Amino acid sequence: MTARLTPDDLDRAADILRAGGLVAFPTETVYGLGADATDARAIARIFAAKDRPRFNPLIVHVPDLDTALAHVTMDAAALSLARAFWPGPLTLVLPRRAGSRVADLAATGLPTLAVRVPAAPLARDLLFRTGRPVAAPSANPSGQVSPTTADHVLRSLGGRIDAVLDGGPATVGVESTILMPTPRGTHLLRPGGLPAETLEAHLATALLPPPAGSAPNAPGQQASHYAPRGRLRLNATAPEPDEVYLGFGPGPAGPTLSATGDLAEAAAALFARLQTLDAADAPRIAVAPIPDKGLGRAINDRLRRAAAPRP
Image (cartoon, rainbow, N blue to C red; front, side):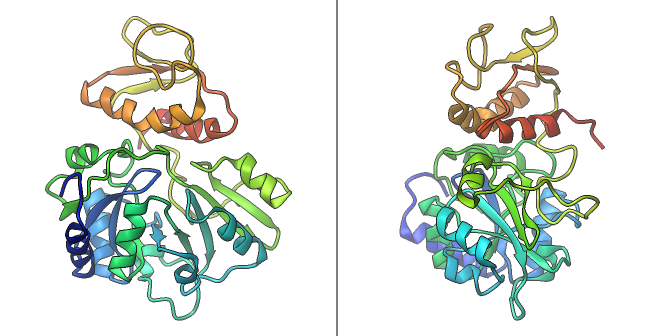
């Protein structure tokens, strides 16, 4: 399936999902690899297609807040966040409601579920047509660069999945921010497309770090993740002779995340630039310093994990 999607295209994609197939589709953050979240065999196909570790939970996508409440319970803080920022690039890790039909494998056996309502109209249309919650991690092999276009998906997962819905480039470009509200406060499990400062202003309190020593209860918590084949050197002011330089703001000529130093533009461009350098087999990549504020926190999180030693 390609651009200029019709209602029939979306109906066929929904049929594939309900039949246990895998469909890649665009959200505002990145392209997700969707499967019926109530079907354990379909969920197992996601883990197999991505070579994803079975301990790494999936995010369950739903079309609206009412559907989310059929699967999770929300305290006052969680409900306030959901009402303020859904649809949007925010995932909430919440206690699973008794009677939820989401397969245990999607939550990797945890008593919590990671849920979100995406803002991309195509994604929400697909979710409404499917009529079931859809588990959807990023549509790429585990640990590699996330996809922000249909071509990125086809390049890495072509032949492993059943369909790709081409809705053009993802607009936000980095995955959702993940929060876990608890009685002690709200933990930031992963910075992402909704800045932490915006969330802290809404909550009128600081976000807490991830709970110490806990097993992964949401995606994006592995030390090595989002990595191209080439090695990354971060906070570089200039390239070394064997490096490609990925700039930000004024600096040496070449590929850049944003020539004007715009963090929203940089976030939207991050994975696309890394995908391009990966396709060109760049052996070493030097990345300019990125301010660690706003969306810069999400960009730096992805870059640090991409540069980490690989398993």
